[in-house]
Image (cartoon, rainbow, N blue to C red):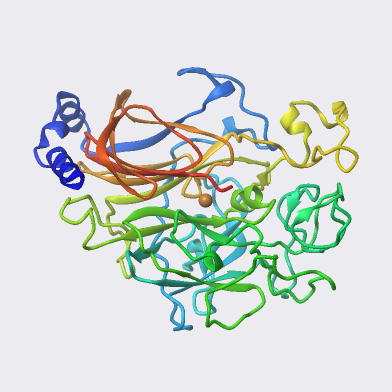
Length: 469
Ligand SMILES: [Cu+2]
């Protein structure tokens, strides 16, 4: 009964073009054959006091964000992730690697990031090189009630097979993975404990991938303590290569640096995403670039017959294919002048003082972590791995699947055409379609959630926001 009502209302919204042909829309469409669709992120809190009065940029790295030109780089739409061909036992083999990506506009330096790609020798290279590695990752397409097996690989090693250290300062006084299995606060020597060493960790990086919102068995969930190290040649003696809750789907060979997870996808069509989930490291590993969409479709599900805009990127698309279903992950980042990502490496950033002004007694003498910041806000908005991109759109309805992948920042999203704000329509959230369609003007999005939206210039957005903790 409830389902019927939902279908009817959504159908009514879609069918008569009344909502899409109000005066504003008519005017905009007649004025502009192509409308530049800008995702306008309005900074919340201290950075914005009125809509047209920006305060000084938030503190961050050595690159002044006001020197970065906006809306000159095209939005990157992540293609579909290639299926595994070299290992038929799994549907996908996805590796996290370190590489350079042009996040800032061309002319600025490239940025060292981590990102997922098809982790096999036959698909090397970054997206810019014609390969599959990108941050955010290419999109995993899955079908409801059809099992997807993924081999997740920690490939954070250099060309010689030695481990790569973290891009950022890792606080060892948190409850964290602690691969050295030494020096826990409770006097034990084990992994997954609160450490005592106030210096930054310099060893191999533990990762574990979690598909956010997936119905999944415990062994395939990607628990924080289910991390694994890369299969590096120089892993220090005595280090644990797995966390205490490491596991994988039954029947698969155990290989160092990998875990095979099984996803039954026994849930409604939905926008999910995958990201790192390691104990005490999630914020850093996701900030470094671990993120990708996992789109769950169901040919017989609730979206069937709704005539939602598409297509989304598919395998084998010819270059130049126009997409009307676009996933967008929005994240705040700060940069240094050399293009590197900035992440605070001490508590002074959070306190808003210079390090020499800190009066705090840090761990291990207190329980206040010296490196970790309870929350952190950054000064450049990055969408699909590009700083302040643009996307030209047709006069057509679009479906956007939006994800807030920021560490701490909530987002107010507005759709501005010329100088006019126009509404969009939310049709879904985390775990699938909403019961009813919601008209939104300047929506607020918390970190790590999901929604679905439609709009009168014919933009239909599917919105996720979700947070990686
Ligand atoms: Cu999550």
